[in-house]
Image 1 (cartoon, one colour):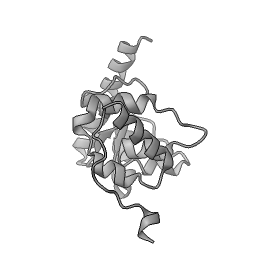
Image 2 (cartoon, rainbow, N blue to C red; image 1 turned 120 degrees about the vertical axis):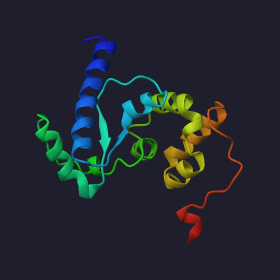
Image 3 (tube, rainbow, N blue to C red; image 1 turned 45 degrees about the horizontal axis):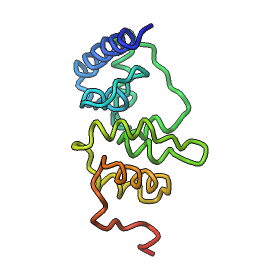
Image 4 (cartoon, rainbow, N blue to C red; image 1 turned 180 degrees about the vertical axis):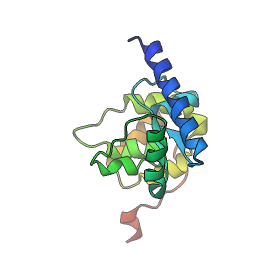
Length: 156
């Protein structure tokens, strides 16, 4: 399936899922790759990330099931922690997974919409996030660090 056809398929599924959640009055946010794309980022054709509060997860799943979607309850706990795509992605980086390419594309496309101070504060414990900010600043994607961020180690 071509990239455009895959994106169209995802958009149709998104419309169906959003309608199901809205009809049940389940509050949700569009996140992940499609969320970035909807705000002007690079196109995504991987999946749809709808964020709901932890306490609304079963309610949301039931709404999607009633719309004809197959419910799945995977064991991965991270599925309930996707509160901010950039924070989640930055904190997932480690010595085995340090590919910044997609993050740089997203940030370049959405740079005016990123709360750089909050992002830096929420990821201050990660040396991989620190390396990311060095790249972002050096490439002129984000603002130069002209303010201080309190880290956990400096609070002690």
